Image 1: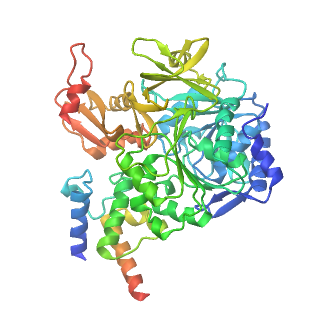
Image 2: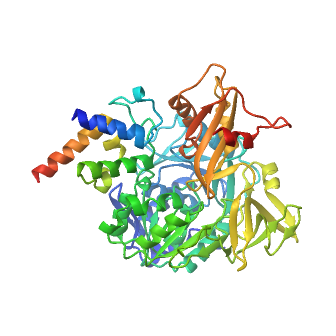
Image 3: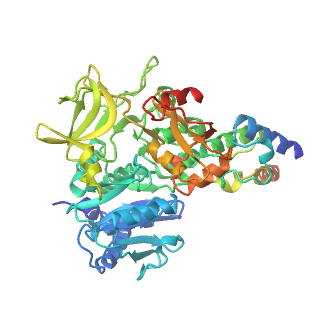
Length: 87
Length: 500
């Protein structure tokens, strides 16, 4: 899923315009905990993930726990996709 | 005299087994009987401290069933509550605690607060609420005898100020709201606003006084429109009161088509201007609900209101009026030439007089004095809001006088952000500006001069986050070689506007 990370990084920097230089955005940079991404940006990110990866967030899943870094987001999306496949 | 909480106790006697609070985050619901019994236990513990009536009790509690118990228990002990913002920096809460001379702090075990560590005695109530008495010197002398609560708002000089509201003043609004919005035991209200925000007075007091059920949202939950949408279905929410900031997220992020919101009969909003296109979208989503615009600074509580038409006209370009005075208040206008127009006509700064007004700013007699003017043997509060009266006698909001803006329903004194920036050792000068479109704040920008060079966004945010609540944190920082000045050596904000 290197492709996923690249795509996501581009979205975070260019579409959400997070206040970071490209080299400051690491895979483990904490976006919510370090107040880089506000709540509206988080909602837009959820919308983006739902649209582009055919997943569906349950209401309680829209939280920092699942959106805090590129690594965390990737793990969450993978888990959602795996669960959807199994179902 | 009837107290603010009396009607809630009456509801408990009338319908003890009805649900008073749904708290999905805690996975509990409390009946009226449970709520009032827990509050009674707390009130007994508080009474054992033998504080003078009307003494202030600070609540260091996030929005939860426990926080509502704390509010009720404090009032039942004839004391007044002072809700702290648990997410605000310790420094700010420390200031409020000291300045208010609160006599005790109520907190839960899992909250740690460095400034309370040497609290002498503790009273633990059923393992839930801990009472920490504070011995911070003599209480401030001028507390009104029937003080109900104190809410701190942003202050222009860099420190927040405590707005004192009595039982009588709060009840003027609460009684009217219960009647006007026909609240009954069949209603379910969302309770979204934190207790330090005056919108919470509607849910907690008008809602519970009517025997309605409240759905308590935690601060985290209240930022999640999808969750709000699902709770509205689960609990059959009939009445929603929130800021336009949250409400306008609902059409895009709330997935209302997936949830059943047919129980919703009214939507109340306050705190800021609702942009027309966003309002139109929301009215399409909740087509059968009535919409109301409520207005009022913390100092007056809600003082004007306006019922919106069922569907916003397609060609409407200007925001809706804030309406006419609620029956317990009167409005007047202070003209540019210093004359007062009462009743309100023409345009100028809005003045409010009547039953819902604050008693003053706690421990700040000079600022209290400056907040009021006298006219026709009446005391009028100067709102700082510019208004205009339209041909139907409705008030139209035209922006702020001075350097205060509103964001997410909160009032922000830009001067308070500047004061916090000036505490940074590397910063020589700072000036703060709000970018606004259609009277809505789009972003807050700070310009600064730092001889040592640029500081990163993260560095500055971290620094300010220790001093200011989250809603006051700027969106952008711009380094300048110098801050432009006017000929009278003041910051030239007009010139700065062109810099951004």
